[in-house]
Length: 149
Image 1 (tube, rainbow, N blue to C red):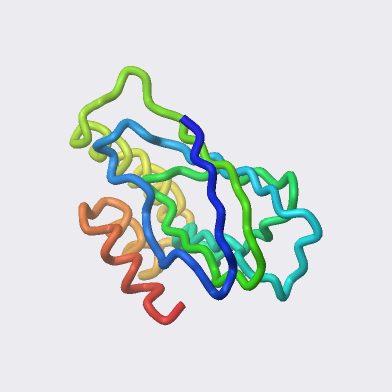
Image 2 (image 1 turned 60 degrees about the horizontal axis):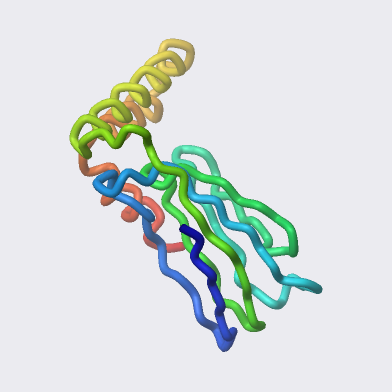
């Protein structure tokens, strides 16, 4: 399935969100931007929040393809002041695991990544990061972390 997105501008945006909670089989989003002659003041940038790393701002320029993990990547679209066009599609798991099994697998994999880093840098920051990655409330916690964005 491909979703055609049209935004008329006038400050329209998408607030911070996750595209999937794991119960629909979607795992990766692919967004292809179709905005010719985009300029910085036009807005409509997608902002990714790859916690605990700094946010990433991507311009919606013609031909740019953005891929990101749906269940892990908190993101938003900044206000657009010019018409904005994009095509979006999703990559699905095959076969579709249960949402619970998928969540457990993700949290375990993230815990392993953070645990490896924690051994190298055993600061309170990394210890807390490990707990957040393992928490079923991660989505809510990240929204609190970035509430002033």
